Length: 213
Image 1 (cartoon, rainbow, N blue to C red):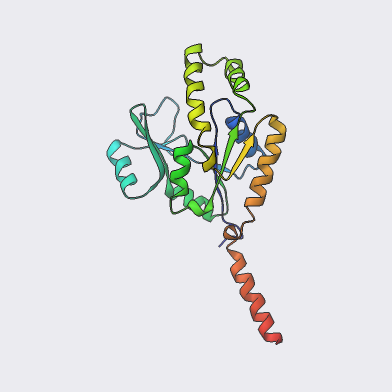
Image 2 (image 1 turned 45 degrees about the vertical axis):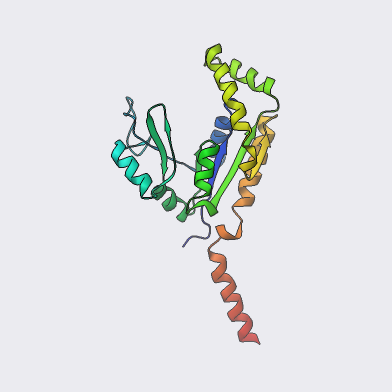
């Protein structure tokens, strides 16, 4: 048994709010963080490796794992299934390492309602304004105007579910948001349920107290 049990750290945001950058910074701050490897039914792309980039499953395997409760969350996206296998996550948090998830609000709810949900920490990243969100999407120069328009429409659906999350950060300054994010993670690691060794320590204190009585 380790001194600390790992967290399931869930980061969500509308596209362009800074979630991916914050996730990279969080993992640079603590290299022991594990990024959750998803399972998918889509075909591997050149260079992708099973178990490193994704767990590649056929549709029958995926559906059976979902039925058996072996997926923390799953969804059907553009003709393929995607999900987060529970086994690797449980082994990682039992070893004392945190696991980072990049999922939407629906994934957050599924993880929260799973057997490992009591170890979840969910954080939603808000943009300072809708105008700034659009500016960031346009500045990335990765998408056409049509795609940006679709992302903007989807962004409000994402934002409207902010109330499901434990913490909500307004990313008006990236460095300050990073510091607030790290503060949250450090504090949540100290939750009583995350420290399994506390029970034995209290028992030891009780024994010492009784011996002196």
